[in-house]
Length: 171
Image 1 (cartoon, rainbow, N blue to C red):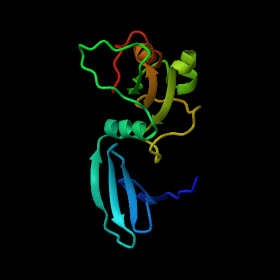
Image 2: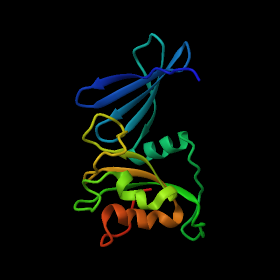
Image 3: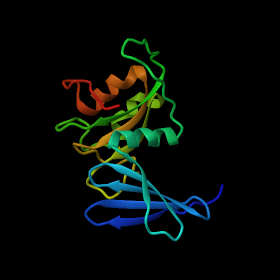
Image 4: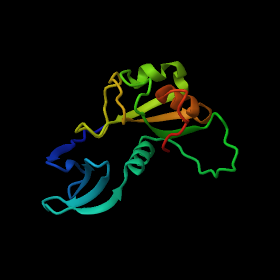
């Protein structure tokens, strides 16, 4: 496997820009804005002006990231019967007062074993797009991106946010 260099540039007050050279003529960029939006850009080598190819909101960016990592999705309607063993990617926001606050996502969701994988913890207060420390203590407002069997989602949401809260997450 070839090494790929990713260049990072702070954008004061806005966020971070990340770039990688695709080939000898083109550079792909991703701008991570502080408001959660992501912009994919492309420019020619030697050209400082990049064209924005696509502008994504937070949930779209998480979904595309999961797809790039190899997650498989299926299209269903609310009336469809979905097998409980189908893996679904979902982002769950940690609520104020949730029992998961102060605990890591790995610790909180460890009881689920291989039925649940923590893909990322997304925290707006840090410069990183995602937190890479699996033992990072969760805070209210963190978004935990998971891959889980369809039948486990309600239990996962309750493990993060408490049994007395509605089992609602963001897909």
